[in-house]
Length: 245
Image (cartoon, rainbow, N blue to C red; front, side):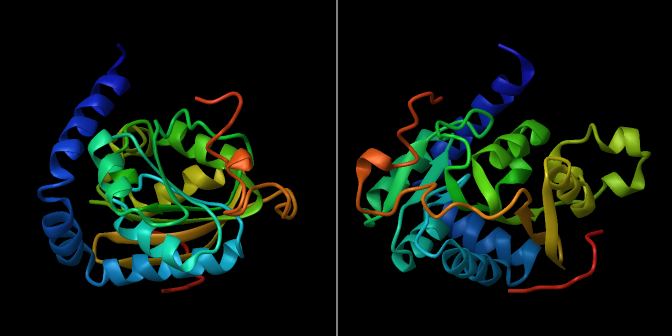
């Protein structure tokens, strides 16, 4: 087992333990407010915008955690919301919500079990900072996002990378990198960052995939399980024009 899978397995085990015990009361309702101010409200707002952008087409939330944010999106969305997470405990917590249209999936963000271009919108809410191998994860998100699709990202960062030489900064864990470095990863795989905001340690941005409009026939609605993006035959509030810092 290489270094990334070992780290990933350890993080998955920790979050599986935390899911029914401390994730929502301590992390979402405590740490998010402490380090991100009104981050929770802004993340819910990203979810509302994601639903509007998707216009009934499939949405992916990854890592979905306990489904706290994915569930809110699913309540408002007339199509499928796939909530993917590596930690089995998080997937179980999402499943217990029993929300119509919310499909929990255990998956590695580096090898998502969805066909290319399956989703009109991706939500990535406060999770990228704990995922090892940021570049590979972002490439995979870009693969499953349809052309013209939008990704909504919120991430908590210590932003120490800007204090170090660029070469050293790129080797840091994601949580220690800056918002500009994370946004640049998305731009390097064919997305354009169109909105950005920072609140304390929280960085929120939107990025749109180039290459033309997302086909409305490219993904399922809620009606047909056979067309669900999870059944790949080859599996495995704020807008500002300034650049991230």
